[in-house]
Image (cartoon, rainbow, N blue to C red):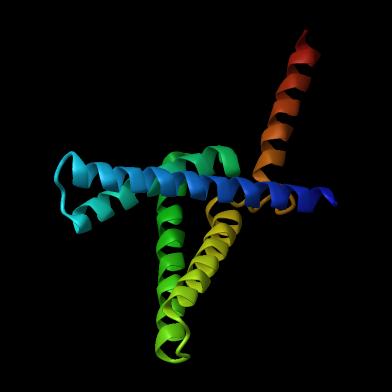
Length: 158
């Protein structure tokens, strides 16, 4: 497998793992809010979703895409891509059920697939993309290059 494809596959697998984890944490938060704090289902769902989104952002930023940019740089773009992906998901589900008479359960599966794919691509190409002056570099490559440059400076001095 080509090195670029290996990096893409690794990122996609890490993104999927983060998705599973943030879903479990968000769902646990929803249930805890409803059971222990007697929150209503809508309020619990909203807060649980925010908790899951925070987990997703943090892990994807640090682990999946190795972003070293400022938190304030990445967060607004992440929220924009999450919102756009959700709207695409909702549109797909609505259109499939309304216009194509697709089974609603299958429509949800299709919507989640499109959501996940568009969210991953948006994160990879927009939110956590390599700087414009190095279009061939991935965030991992930049981090490795910076480490190599620092090591070379240290060796040259010492």
